[in-house]
Each structure stands twice: as structure tokens, then as C-alpha cells.
Length: 409
Image 1 (cartoon, rainbow, N blue to C red):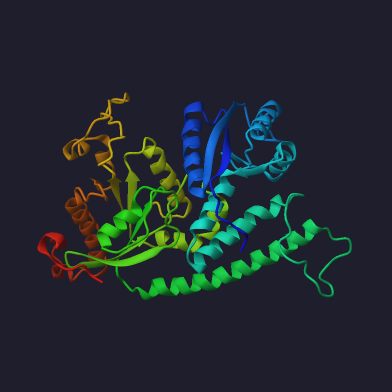
Image 2: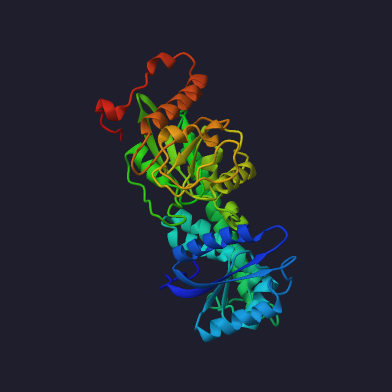
């Protein structure tokens, strides 16, 4: 795998552009998220640079004057990393490295680096490594350091082959090897999913850092890793859950994000298969985040891309214990002041009028958990009855926590 040494909070600056398709308000929102990504990766952001352009410059993404301004700043302040909010083309990356002479990262590269740090299992590491190589292949430049000792043997080198050409061949060979490895694991995971039989499968989906793993722990009474950072969970976790006396499988999946790199969508195909093959989606939303509506749209877009958008769904608005959310009236576009909103008030907001069953909870404090569990129970039971129409009388809902039942293993 590529060398991904843990960053010791290196200093970085962020760069974004205001264009016809991205106004200043949207850029600030994206840059805020980019700063959280940088922090998660291990960087300290010391300054932001923005520029208004009709469209990004084809050579350096930003204008030459802005590039000079950034160069002067990073030299004066001994900053070694510049992070762009959008994906740079190979030529833009090469030109910027040549002009500014420091490490240049784009949003895609940053997300890949976070995934590389977070991957715990062999399968997740293989997926991330494949995505990294696919991203790097067209971006080999003179600043590239050699991957490994050059291949030897008769017929392995063409006449006059350069070091970069050798690197490209090594990467292509590695990509082929990783793809074959993933195919083998994919077949094994598909067999595992088939072996789960006819048990109803529910999958937690949502934007990154909305509380899916915390909710997973609370519902399944298990210990799935949860942290207040982006992409804390990369490895799919499946737990058997029993609500009342109705068993089903619950899956915690990788969080989505805006501008998700296409390399990751492809390499995490099997992880997304857990979503694609689920019977019920539990869409978790961080209602305290000011951009939660955009997060919902981003998740729905990815669900559409993987053909999972027509599945039964429950909308779970999480973090009602956090008061950062500015309440909106149904027909009023102006925000009210931020106050402590009661559960009854949440249930009167426009979010409660979703076409899907909707519930407002706090995964941290377990506020309104009984209603959520009853809602999940009802939706799982509908799917179960459609498969086994003659044994619905076997199931009766009750709150296992109130009744004192022990958690299922």
C-alpha cells in the first residue's frame, strides 16, 4: 500500500473559487466542510483563499495573480500544504506544483488520505488502495517518488523507458491485482449476504458524522466505533437486532459526503452493496447542522446512483439535543432565533411532513427512542409479512428496555 504516515498537524491553507455554479454562501459552506476534512486528516488550517471566477482556470484552476499571492503567503509563513476544494486535473496539479513549489492536494486526494488512515480491515485497506492508485495514475509528475525497485527480467522494460513510465506500469499492474483481490472478496461477501436467509435487512445511511454509529450502538446494544470526526466508520458492521420479538439485521455503512470521489464509489462497491441489497433504509440526518437539507439531497443523489432510491425508508432526524438548528415555520423562509425546541414543536415542523415515516431523536441521550423503535418495528414487520404472510400473529411489539429483557446476542 502507499505510504500514508500519520500527519502531525501540518499547517495548511485552503483554496476555493466562487463561480456561476457556486455562489459565495455555498463556497463558505464547502470550505467549512473542507476545514473539518483537513482537521480529520491531521492538518491545522491557518488561512483561506477565495477567488471569484467565471469558471476555473484550465491551467492552474485559479488566476495567476491569486497563485502568486498564495505562493508569497506560504513562503513567508512556512506552510507546506495547499488544499483545493475541488478536484484538480492532472495538468492543473502539475502546473500548480511547479509554480508554488509546495505540496498541492485537492478535495479528492484529502478524502482518500482520510480513508487510508481510517481503514482498519484488510478489505477496507484494499478498497482504499485501489482508489488511491486510480486517482494517482494520471497524475504522475516529476515530483513523484519511485514506488519500488524497478522490475527486472527479460522483456520487462522497453527501450528508453523512463522512470515515470515504469511507475505507470507498476501502478497498472497493482490496480489489476487489487481488482482481482476485490472480486474474490466480493464473491465471499455476496455468499455471506445470501447465507443470511430471509431475515429482513435494514441499513443505516446518511451523511458522514450524523451519528449513525452512535445510533447503531444504542439500537443493537453493541460497541461500534464512533467519533466526532468525518468517516469514523469505513468498515461495514452487521448486527442482529430484536425489537419486541421481531428479529432483523441492522447494518452500519460508510457515511456519504458531497463531491464523493468517483474512485471511492467504484472501489467501495461491495460496501454500497449492503445498502443496495437492504430491504429498509434508515436515513439518519444531523438536524443540528445548518446544511442538513443539502446533506439529505447528497445522500439521495448517491442512493439514486447506486439504484437504491426506491426502497422503503425511515427518516431519523438526530441530535435534537443540540440547539444549533434554526427552526423554520412551514411557509416561512425567514429563520427564527435559535432556542431550545421541544419534541412537540419538532413534530409540527415541515420536516415531519416527509413522504416517509419520520421521527426526531437524540442518539446520545436516547430521547424519543420508543417512538423510533416502534416505527422501525412497524416497517420491518410490513416487509416480514410480505414474505411470510401466515406468521404475522407470532409477533407482538413491546419495548424491550421497559420490559427488562436482556439484549440479544
